[in-house]
Length: 317
Image (spheres, helix red, strand yellow):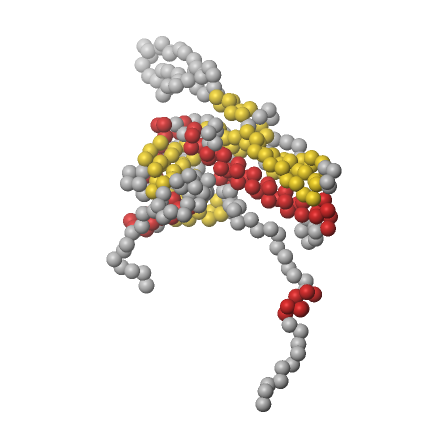
């Protein structure tokens, strides 16, 4: 005897009356942007930051240090300054968002279409800001590191010895390392091989591994073979060590304080109007730069290979 089928409402039909829970737009390309969180920033009034420096010399002014009463001639002199110090000018990173008012009027529940567009645009500008702080031809950290502060990985892969040598270059209160996630993974493999796994530290609400107590901050803006997300198993990148802070003569991020329509530090959003077709337009801009106050505030480990792996005789259980 055939089994009797009882008719019932199915999920396809019920879906039409269901109150579906929706999320805001998820943008997979966004990153935590730790660099702009841990780097100290300085707000500017006129968009220009002049870095005055003392003229070269180990001891800028001689001094008398003696208990001999016959030696009473006190050295005289003055501390000279660099005549033409470098001035850093803010650069702008801008984009325009267009939203059809008919769309924003009709489809703004539960999420305001204009607000969501501006949020995503702001995050995109911040991504570019972090990349420029590292890679800009004018003020980027990679291009502005002194030649005396650059070293090359001895064997390609990032070894604890290499990071120790980098610390010797930036030994005056180093703040953090900066590295691509694959470079961090390569360094962890080296530490595991040597039996010296790095500890973890918590700063700015995140947990990071640390070497010699200095956190290693991940960023995909330190490219591997020129790419944020390389597909190849091997590749070369750089690792930075940074001392940050104006009081410590370190690296300082720069931004324009109090810009009109300010959404966050140095970033503004301005309404440009509605055209004859009913399209609303918004201009978003972030003004930024970075300054290296002293040569020894920044060190670079170059030609770091990220694709070396090891085979262990004892396989994990």
